Amino acid sequence: MTAAAAAPIDWPSLAADGFPFPEHIPASRLVDELAAALVSPDPGVRDDGAYTAAARRTREGRLDAVLQELGDSAAGRFTHPETQARTFAPLIICLVLTRAAGVSALVPRQAAERWYAAFSAWYPNERDTRGWDASLGWLHAVAHGADAAAAFAKVLPHRRTDLLDLCARRVTEPQTDYRYAQLEDARLARALVRVLQAPGLSSEEAIGWLDVVAEALEGGGPGPVPVWAFNTFATLQSLHLHLTRGIADEDAPPHAPAVAARVAELLRLPYYWLA
Image 1 (cartoon, rainbow, N blue to C red):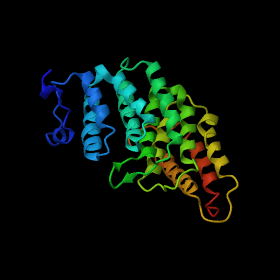
Image 2: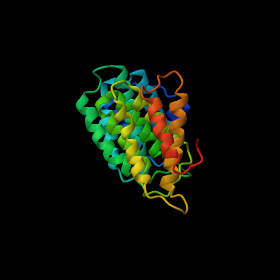
Image 3: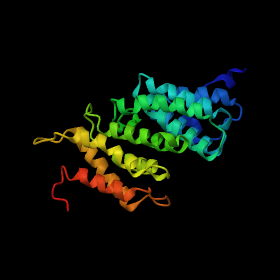
Image 4: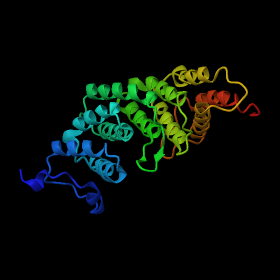
């Protein structure tokens, strides 16, 4: 191998050139290059370069031969010590699962289950939930995780009730001082609607996860609204809007009216004047 062939990919230059596919690099090495770049604290390398390239090439099918390796690599970053590495892992998982949902047999179910185990251990427990950092750029653990949850629901439909519960645990996690400021509530709402869309859930299953929210809100009294409760109310409002208006060009969940009614009941806790 020549020195030029072995040189790491210059992701910002690749982005500036319009992301030509690096034909000279074996797909297996490309997975390693992406793994290294996706932990970078430089958003130009991580987000504008590596993630954008991975998204484009995955959708085109250029990475089909290494799709499972790409997912395994991302799942391993859920325990990475650096925030940006953890919070970009679900984006790659989402890309892989979305591609796998559209093209059968690309990803074995065992691999998706393995990734789900890593994701479910990370998502409700991530402590750094900031949407944006002036130095690191987008972090967006809540929003990125929500996108991954919706993707898991398509590939692992038997996990839908687990995923609903997981999102409820994420939004009601009390150990946070970050108020949703970058539309995290809307991303969660969209993901929840997509998890609820597929047929097969009973009315009780479609609504039951909201008991997690109700239990978290029990006992609230006078005084300032805790940050986690503010985030929860914002997400419930956004979810009600998504359930009643729907998502463009997508089917409404079978139990949308019942779920919306339960959400409205919970919103009457802070907004007692609602009709």
